[in-house]
Image (cartoon, rainbow, N blue to C red):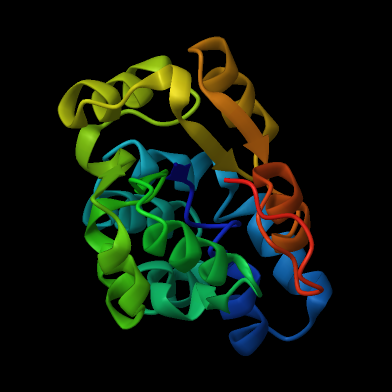
Length: 201
């Protein structure tokens, strides 16, 4: 099993941070749409350091320099906590002897935000886009995990919340599962539910 992290195991969203520091929801949405945009952040997932990108962006938007700096200084505040139920699925799979991996689009320099989660130790390995300098859904990052860790694609499920990443996994021969919530994931995997039904792994 290969799991994405943000959006599957943890609730990552920059709004969690900026709701604490900006005036209201409109200002948060405007800031993320016009200043610290998704496209800007994807540089970090692809391996570019925030020590370069933040000063560049602050020079373009000096009136937002303090808020831009928080993207690195308080990145941990973007992670609100675990997504309910998914960690339990990971623990059950681990107890059943299933090999577990994580494949995540994340900046390498902020991976320490996961240090507070003891379940990270259940993964045999974690492949991080910021370290590899290639992001999902590029097939190259999936192949890095497969080649480095001897994964059999035909017998491996891949779980991600983003449809383009699941589609790329399907194309490579994985069994792709788009994550919506833990209950649906249990159904997709044939795991026992809270009422005791379904036991197939």
